[in-house]
Length: 126
Image 1 (cartoon, rainbow, N blue to C red):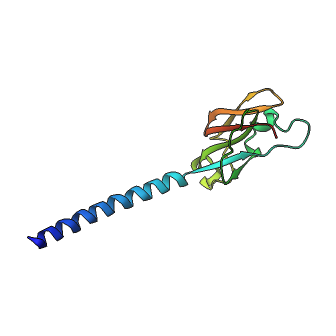
Image 2: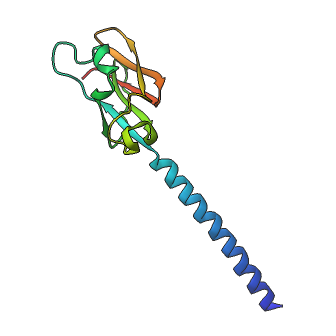
Image 3: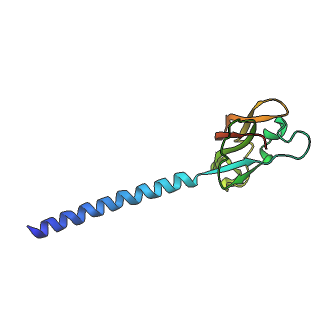
């Protein structure tokens, strides 16, 4: 009877470890499939001009998303699937898959929901 219990415990432990391993790898892959891009303000009189903010080449990978402040006056960050970047490398936005939409005024643009990205964050003007 004691041997039977040991077998059952071993079997249950093996099944639990299998499910835990699958869960951990699935979660890791889901997290690794996205990258944060941050807007790189341009120099000049209007660094947050709509034409700059909507230009995919003005966005660069960043370690973290921006934190929105009291007011949300200027574009800051977006989350993009790696499959929506050139070659899936997560380094450059693929302009055939990502189209950045803007709000606000023509010289002080914010980023809003668009195509190929999620979670647009705007910040207080620096």
